[in-house]
Image (cartoon, rainbow, N blue to C red; front, side, top):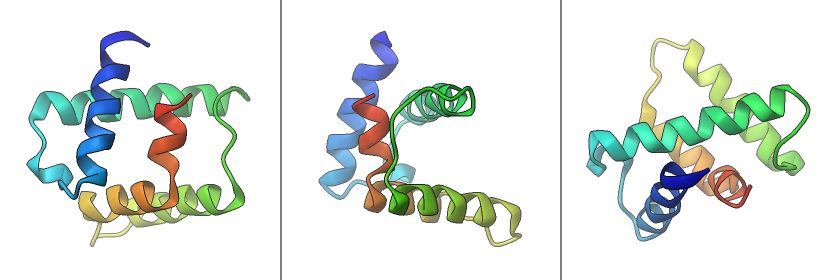
Length: 92
């Protein structure tokens, strides 16, 4: 997955260190979500990382959040980080 993958790994370390997504550069945010959507495409095709039940619930929770008027990117990011979704994606 190349450069985006390496960037996502670095971002993952930064997020574990407490950095918020709003603190990331525009390029880093783009790389993070680019990688995320690549993996999601694999999942929709029946390939990709195997998520735990808890991680699948986290993805469903974020999908519901995205539909609300109160959607905040930080909330989605925190859910993905806390549930291990980002880690599963980075390690895919």
